[in-house]
Length: 505
Image 1 (cartoon, rainbow, N blue to C red):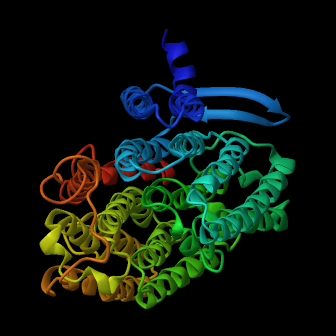
Image 2 (cartoon, rainbow, N blue to C red):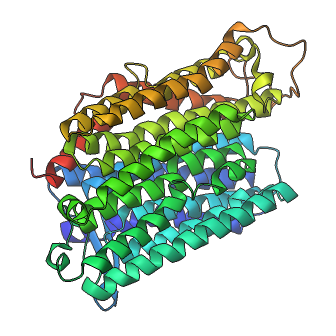
C-alpha cells in the first residue's frame, strides 16, 4: 500500500486541478453553482493531498512517479523538500485566489473559460514544482505559458490582446532558450533526477565551455518568467489582466516558476561548487542586483497602482536570485524563504488593488486619497503588506532581508548590504506615499466609480465577502510567517532544512 501511495500521490496532486479544470471548460455559463463547487472541491482536495505528502516526507518516505520516454530521461514527479516549499505556497494561495476570483468575476462573461484555464495554470505550476528532472520541468514550464496566455487576454480588449502578444513573444522566446540549454545538457549527461549538489561535477573539466553555455541559456530562459532585466518587458503590460490573474502571475505561478527554476538549476543540476568553479556566480549576482535597483526605480515612476506593484515584483523577486547567487547557506535560506514570503505579501497587495478598483473604481495612485476611511480593513492589509515589502520588523520581508544581508557578510560580499539598504529605501519611497494617501489625506466627495458587488450589504461595510476574506486570510498568513519565523512549521525553518542538505551542514 505504501508503494502505491508514494508512487501515485505526486501525479494525483497535479490531476486534482487538471481534471476539474477540463470539466469546467464544458460547463455552461449559467451552471454557476456547479462551477463554484468544482473549483472549491479541487482546491480543497489539493490541500488534503499535499498534507498527506508533507506528512509522509516528514517520516522519511520517498514520493516518486516516473515514465521513461526518452533515452536518459523521462517524466519524473517527486515530492522532495524543495518542491514541497513551492507546492505549499501554490496550493494555499490557489484556494484563496479561487475564492477571490469567484467574487471578482461574479457578473463577468466567459467564466467557464476563465476558470478552466485558471485550473490548468495551477496544474502546470504544481507540475513544474514537483518536476524531478529538467525534461519534466521544461514540459510543465511550457504548459504554464500556454495556460496563462488566455488569462492575460481574458478581457479581449485591444490593450489586452496587445499585452498577450508581448507576453507570448517573451515567454515562448524564453522557452526556446531553456529548451536549447536543456537539450545541450541532455546530450552530455541525459536528464538525471535532481539531486542536492548537482550531477555535473564529472563533466567540469572535459566540457567546461558547454556547461557555461548551457547555464547561460537556461538562466536566460528562466529569467524571462523571473522578470530579470532586460527580459522583464512583458510583466508591466500584463497588468491589463483581471486582478486574480495579476495575483496569480506575481505571487504563485509565472514569476515564481522562473525563480524556482533558477533555484533548481543552481542547486540541483549544477551545484554550488560547480557554479563557482565555472565563474558563473558573480555574473548572476550582478544581474540580480541590477534588477533589484532597476525595478525599484521604475516603480517610483508609475502612477498606475498595478503597474507600480508590477515593477515592485520585478525588484522583489530578484531577491531570490540574489540569495542564490551569493552561494552561501544563510543567503540561500533567505532566498528560499522569500519565495513564500514575497508570495504572501504580493498576493495581498494585488487583492487590495483589485478591491479598490472593483469597489470604488480606483486605478491610479492619486485616486487613493482617504480610501482607508471607506475601506479600513483592505487598507490595513495593504499597509501591512507594503511594510513587509519595505522590510519593517517583524514582518516576513524583514526576515528575508536579514538572512540575505547576514548571508552576504558570511561569504565576504559586504557591498550587498548597501544594495539591500538602497532597495529598502526605494521600497519605502514608492510604498509610503500610498499609505499616507490612504490614511491621512481627506477622501474625495465621490469615488471614481463606486458600485455594489453581489447581493445585500457589503461585508463588514467594505465590499463583497469573497473579495475581503482572501485579503484578511493572506494578511494574517504574511504576519504569522514573520512573527513565528522560528517555529518548526515556518517557511524559514523548512528552508533551513533544505539548505542544510544542500551544503552538508
